[in-house]
Structure formats: C-alpha cells, structure tokens
Length: 167
Image (cartoon, rainbow, N blue to C red; front, side, top):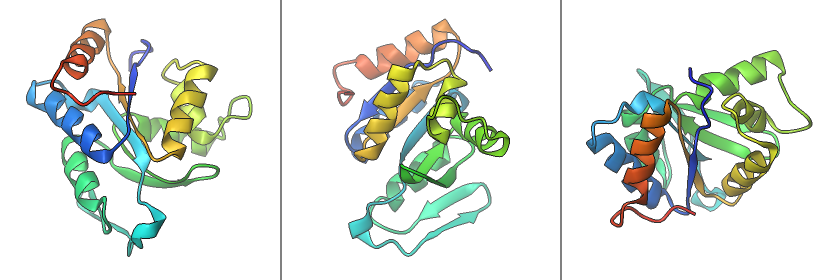
C-alpha cells in the first residue's frame, strides 16, 4: 500500500458520508482505496447488536441501513470497541491496519489504536487528534488511500458543488 499522504474528509452526518461515498463509487473509482470510520451506533438508539453474514456486517438500530449500504461498497467491514472512542464501525484499508496495530501493540506516543493505525498511512499527530476528535463527536471520517492521481480524483469529486460539504 502506498505511503502517500491520505487525505481525510470529515462529514457531520451519516447521510453526508453516504452521499459522498456513493458519488465516488458512481465515478468508477476503485473502492478498495477508501476507508470510513464512525461510531457504530448512538446510545440513545438502543441497538440490539451486530452480526455478520458472509463478508457483510449488518447493524440493528437507526444507523444500520447506512452501515449496511456502505459495507456493500467498501472492503473489510468491522466493528471494534476502542478504549477512549467507544464502539467504532469502519471499512476499507484502515481495518487490517488497525488489526495489525492491536495485535502488535503498536501504540505510538500515547495515541489510541486508531491513532496508531492512522500513523501507518502517514498522518501527523495533529491530524490524528483532528480525526479522533471528529469520531468522538459522532462525525464520519472518509480516508483516501492511493497515489497522487487517486487522491486528486476523489478530492475533486468531494469538493464539487453538489457534494455535501466536508468539515
């Protein structure tokens, strides 16, 4: 996997993140080069739980339809309980990287397991704080992995006028 800087886009709602990911998918972009990170549920929604069927994870609760749809587009869906962040749902290349950090106890400079995984993609300490903070307040982080052309294509798509604004 490329060690190029992976830009991240922060979306305030799952609807905005869903629209952005679908726009990228509809452009023909290789979806194996996208990751998404967000809370698996909101505590006031009282979800029953998570389960897997094949390679897809489904979630019961208000945001279940969002995650089910996104996981149909992206690779390696997973749900983790991350200390300090809570229950996180994610998909894409970030998942095996996070698993590697958890298995290898590769925690870097007191950052969380998510922070350690993001450093593997070249994120700075300031970026780690920004993206972890976004996840803590129930925003969604979409990461682009790949070469400069991939990054430019997704950046252009997500900055286009009809895409929900990323924070």
